[in-house]
Amino acid sequence: MDKCFKDAATAMAGLIKDGMTIAAGGFGLCGIPEALIEAVRESGAKDLTFVSNNAGVDGIGLGRLLETRQIRKMISSYVGENKLFAQQYLSGELELEFNPQGTLAERLRAGGAGIPAFFTRTGVGTVIAEGKEVREFDGEKYVMERGIFADVALVHAWKGDTEGNLVYRKTARNFNPMMATAAKMTVVEVEHLVEAGSIDPDCIHTPGIFVQRIVHVPNPIKHIEQTTVRERPLVAPVGVEE
Image (cartoon, rainbow, N blue to C red):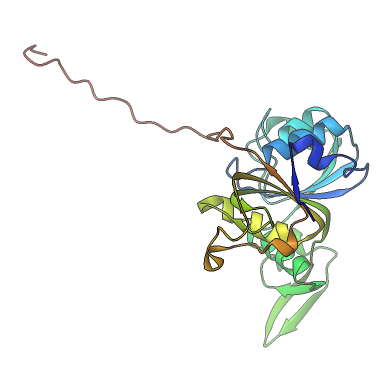
């Protein structure tokens, strides 16, 4: 079966429906499946639930879908960089389910592993535990969290082969690998697409069995979420007294 599609719009054609739950990889603006997110925007699908560490920033990443009011609910751990997100949440326009960052990653890993729920100490005694089962193990209290299994996962990989075997690079490896396993359908955009067998098996992070659709997106824009620079020291030209 040929998994490769000519562009993001073709790869996503007929896939996104109103009311779906979609997992989108990335950490901040690093490793976000930007081309696939844009294809979701073009689909016009509404009332979507997105599972993502964050919601991008205004005008970039999932921020593009907030602009078009296509997202009904976010399941996230950090949303502080997006002003539109805050506005929509505070006005009651957007539903939000907050998760500790490690808990969110584990919920996705559990979903991909077929584990419906697990217990963690993180969040016990806080608003995170409200309405959830709390159980005691070895004298310590733990809160039960449900695994997450989405309808569709959107993933960004640094390298992939035509069978869908994937390699992630640095920070982009935080959430993309778990999300690639935690959905009925996984669509991947890869920066470098190579022939099957070209990747050393020991270097593969996500086996191709988890991937159904691939699109080659060479030279994506690498956005910087926050630019921090030092002031340039004032140095007088050679031979000129200060």
